Image (cartoon, rainbow, N blue to C red):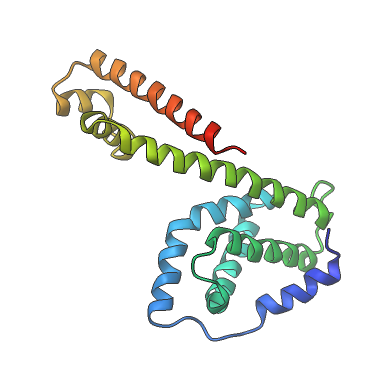
Length: 194
């Protein structure tokens, strides 16, 4: 684990002022931030006890990412890059506030939690990719039913009306589709595991 002095020197690197992105870079930054902001926010809220503090840290993260976007390498994992910045912002906040709750005092503990979140995120990312592939394999009618239920947030009655089925038939169809998707995802993940 890194010592505090290492974090302090890295923090200086992250907070040093640089020119914000412009033109296409600014657009890429905003697109990436929009796609991944919920994940970054969940990460920070997991590491910080107080929601108001977490929001302050997220604001500092957005500003730092904006200033440092020229250092982000296209094609690399944006969320991993953002989490690295967020972790430094969390540690900065802890030092500045001089708050030392028993369960979050140690920077090593914060790093350990952050590492576990990253590992879980990789697993969820693999699962999400497998689910996306499995959804693409569904017949069009089944895919449309899934889209209505989970992406358009339609209730069973609305789906039944829009697909000319009974509510019971919609329940049975969704149950079969979920089982098929679960089997497909499980199979894909078992083949991708070394």
